[in-house]
Length: 545
Image (cartoon, rainbow, N blue to C red; front, side, top):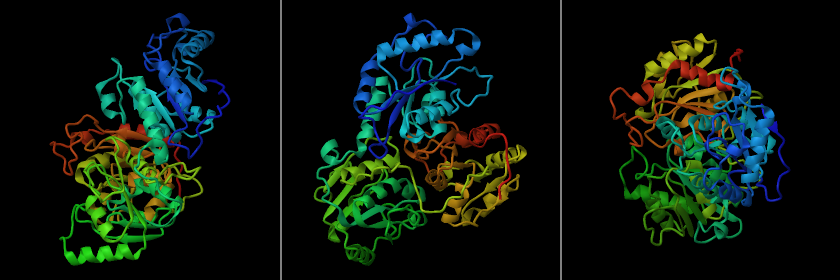
């Protein structure tokens, strides 16, 4: 890899904990400048419309910039290193200085770690800028830019051109029409963590450190886990945090840092299997909430849920200040009515609500998902396969998982198959292809420790994917597109996405697959999974205890 040394950081450079991102990386050809194949001539450099203005806005916001570019013309002898340097000098003359340049000089035969879609250049750019890939954005124009970002754990934004494949557009977590719009998106998301008086996100800033705050997330384990960074932000501004959760999310809530006490209630307007609405149960919960002594509440919901029924009960319990995201008119039920555009990652959505309520993450918080379960001293090379899912539409057919486990085992990987107590028949059938069956044998904490010690996790869009993100284990995501990938992908962790992102079930929110044959996941090939696993584990497999 050819690397130009980074420039010293500007005085306004972002620091960890001062926003979601520290740096924005760019693909070169087709993104910053018009694509001229194998260009070694500075005279042919033409920036895309609005590129200079977009870059200057990032620099003014304190974000560092870099370029990550495949240049196989060097390996092919189409131009020299001097020619390449002259082209880059011309780009900087037109677009301003970049803080790092990362160049892969190899062609596709080299098998290097740097050529996109491999993550090497993204990781090296982050290191050169003194940050981590998770705090970087990569803006590019084709699928391999997106894949390189995701495999490194960075945020990806796609700006399609005429050369971009429709399947690449469908697979991208975020898509904008122009480079300027991509920068708008980055800066908008960066502002999520500004206090209300700076961003205008809330209607009233929270006073000084609160004595007791109630936080609410009444969904499943995965939903609770993605709310973790926002709950840590609340905990940084409160002496005590009480969390109201549902029975499906309690095991995850018990692992969240910053939570001092748990209340459990199956909210009848949230839970998919609600209890009957009974006056006595409602009255008892109102009294229990009042007994916490909470002065304030932050109600976290998913994009399709309303916080207003609970807000009414919180008012009845004497909660003085309530914050929530609500598109519906809240009347007197909310003090801070926050709004977030669709498509924002759920973890960022929750963080933006915390900020709107006046709770900013402490300096140094990396904003990743996190739990209190212990991690092993080193990550092993075994692969965990979790074939179950919270709803059938998001699960690969069992026969696909059987082929995946057989392929991994044949390649020499040690495979551990996990699942809940109600999934033992499934895990037994899948593990019989060459894995070890651990179905029904682990608590949530034990599953977290098991995943933390793995080289990677192969899983659908379900709770353990977010558990992997919380312990930093890379994910091979067999993702059914029934809900947007940009919202529900494992947050800030290296991943490879597989499955048909353009399948007819896309954005249907279906719990049961509406398309015969489950085409979004039934077409996943074991070879593709094996290649994805190699991205994180490599070809040398050592047995781990």
